[in-house]
Length: 108
Image 1 (tube, one colour):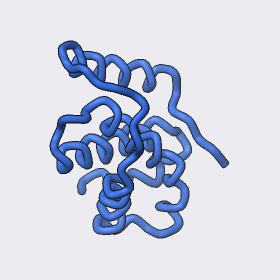
Image 2 (image 1 turned 135 degrees about the vertical axis):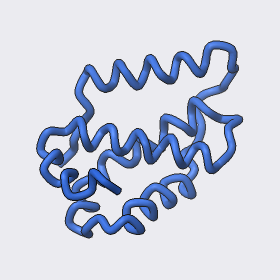
Image 3 (image 1 turned 180 degrees about the vertical axis):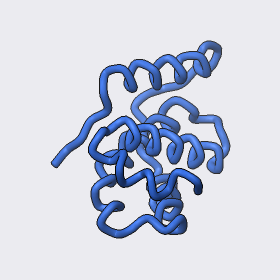
């Protein structure tokens, strides 16, 4: 099952990225850095998310990793990981079927 972000969330994330890209030059395409993806996965595992929930959100991780790698090329690795994790949370929260799952983790 492939899940996608709503058009509203896509537009909001695009607008945020464009603000940061105003004076930054970059070349596409770039290869995704598997280390960023690994860090995002590690974040969710370290914060006690169940394996079942983790399997459900995996489709959101790849696009979440692609955004900071392709738009923030000159940014430090840790910052790319933080942005990718934040975007993953945004995509999860935006998907209505995950809202009940996230309620257990809202205070983390």
